[in-house]
Structures are given as structure tokens and as C-alpha cells.
Amino acid sequence: MKNLIRENIKTKGSMLIFRYSILTLMILSTFTVLAHYVYACSVPVFRYALERWKPDTYKGIYIYRGELSEQDQKLIDQLNKASSVEAALNLIIRPVNLDTFSKDKLKDLLKGPIPDKLPLLALWYPGQMNKTPPFLKEIPSPSFVKELIGSPKRKQIAESLLNSDSVVWVFIPSGNKKKDESALSLIRQELDLALKKFEKNPYTVMDGSERKRLSYGFPVMILSRDDSTERVLVETLMKSEPDLYKHTDEPLLFPVFGRGRSLGCLYGESITKKNLNDAVTFLSGACSCEVKNLNPGTDLLMAAPWDIVVLNSFINEGALPELTGVMPETAEPAPDKEEPPLKEKEVNPADNISVYAVYTTALAGVILVVIILSIVISRRRKE
Image (cartoon, rainbow, N blue to C red; front, side, top):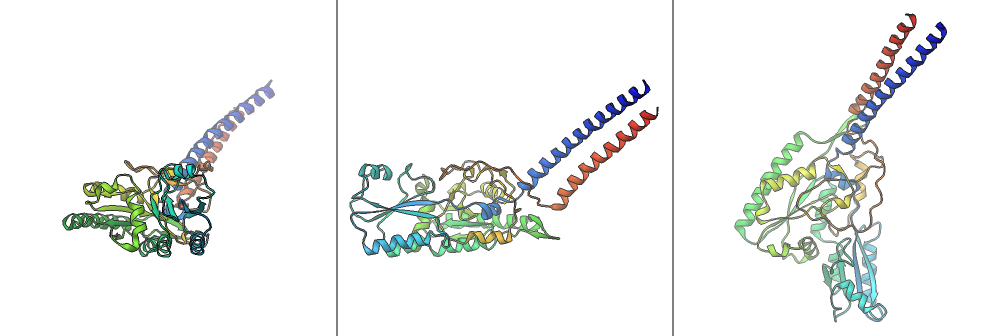
């Protein structure tokens, strides 16, 4: 009988240890999830976008009739070469022969009549082909194709972002000196204040035994509407939202971040201290875990060696989900293609010491509970 009681005590004691161990492990798992969420999502939006968001692809058609001329073929080859992996222009061009292509389908694609004068180059924003008319239609020429592939301002934007500037604020003046000076003064004032704040408390990660600090920069670029060398950039920005051409007498401001992504536009009276702070806070703050195409904005047509930023990555090498946030009152772009399902998240420690502290504390709790229960059960056995 005594042996039976002893065995019963042992069994109950073992179950008690098991239950408390499971409870403690559940607590440990909760700490792990919290640590996972905090550290995987602590990377600033502008930095994560620069390292991980591949630019969306613009699509276009090169409409011609009959046989391609030698010059037309040369221009198409030039565009295809610029869109290669090495050159990295986010553009795909498809030749369309009017003699063999369905005219009804082409009208439906253009959302309007077929122009009489050919050849014609028509371009769509990412994800907008078959949904909207092309935002740009142009008779192709060597000078236009050269401008389409690259321009001084777009090159300057790309170099600025690759050289650790956080956001390039592209300012398009209205031509009204008083309005433009007032807007520029406010923009520079608020960006200077924000820059000082972030420089005092920058985002950091552990790089081996040393702490690596993220640098910040908010340069303002002036872009004239009448700059003949920047027609493609001006058109792309001005048509990125449906009503911007209604505000030709107002100054316009486009925050460009990541790999050349315009967040949206502030114009005229919407260029306020609050709206500037909201944009800065969103782009420089931690973000929630969502796919890129849920993020507001439009990728610009731009060629740059973006992948070199991974050599100085602030993101853990594990396969993380794309990060984004929610910026109010900004239209979302249509996705170019269906996004693949999100992969299971991995821990991205922004501070290894803190992560290890979470695990160490929780594990110490498990060991302490097991020791206490063992002592209690041992005393009961003796009794």
C-alpha cells in the first residue's frame, strides 16, 4: 500500500512538473513572439524599402506598321539593353505590328483610337496596362529614348538614396515666387528639425561586436516643370495621381525613398507642418509587417544598381516579410502581379543583447520552477 502511495505521489509530482513546465514554456513562447515582432519590424521604412523592395516594372508597347526600320530596331534594342539585369531599368517594351495585331484589341489597350502617325511608344505605370490609358505617348526618337532611359535628376536621386540619404524631397515650384519661397522655407525648417532628432537617437544594429548606426539625410531637390531634359520625370510625377494637373499654380512636393518610390504628393496648402511631420514619421519610423503593394506610392522609372546596398545591410539575412506602414489619405497603386504568400517570419534582432536577455530570463524561469517543484515533491515523499 505504501509503495502504491509513493508511486501515486511520484506520478502526481511528475504531472505537476510537466504542467508547470508547459506553462513556463508558453510564457517563453510569448516572449519569443514579442521579441520577434519588435525586432523584425523595427527597421525604418525608408531603409527596408531600399534594401528589399524591388522596383515595380513599367510596361510599354512600340507600335509600328509593316517592317521595322533599322532605326526602330536599334531603339528597341537600346531599350531592351537598358532593361537588362546589369542596367536595371524597370521597363519592359513589347513591339506591336499593326498589320498583324488586332486593331480592336489595340484600341481597348490604348483606351482610345489608334494614332495615325506611327511608330508610337506608349507607356503604362506598373500594374496599369489593360486598366487605364497609357500615361505617356511619344513618337520615338534617339533623343527621347535616351531621356527615357536616364536623366540627370533621376541619376541624382538614385545616387543620393544609395549614398545613405533617407528621403529625397522633390520640389516642383509653381512659378509664384511668394508661394514657392514660403513652402520651401517651411519644408527646410521641418526637415532640419527632424534630421537633428533622428541624428540624436539613430536606429542601430549590432554588427559583430560593434554597434552600427544608420545615417539620415533629407535633401530637397528642385525640379522645374519646364526642364526639357526631365520631361519623363516631370510627367511620371505629375500623372502619378489623377488630379495633380489641377494644381499647376501650386508648389508640389514628392517624398522619394527606397529604390526610387514616390510616397505621394503634398501641394499648395497641404504642405503644412503636420503633413510634413506625418510623412517624416512614417518613412523614418518602424513599420508593420505587410507586403509592398499595400504601401502607398508609385515607383519611378529609374535605372540604378540598387542591390549594392545589401553589402551594408541593416536587415538580418533571414527571409523576412516585406515591411510597410499605413499613410492616410494616399491612393494605393494596383499591384503589377499577384503577390506570393508571405513566408513565415524569422527573428531579425536589432539588438542581440536584448534578444538574448529575453531568452535567458525565460529559461531561468523554467529552471527555477522545476527546481522549486522538485524540492516540494521531495519533501512530500519524505513525509
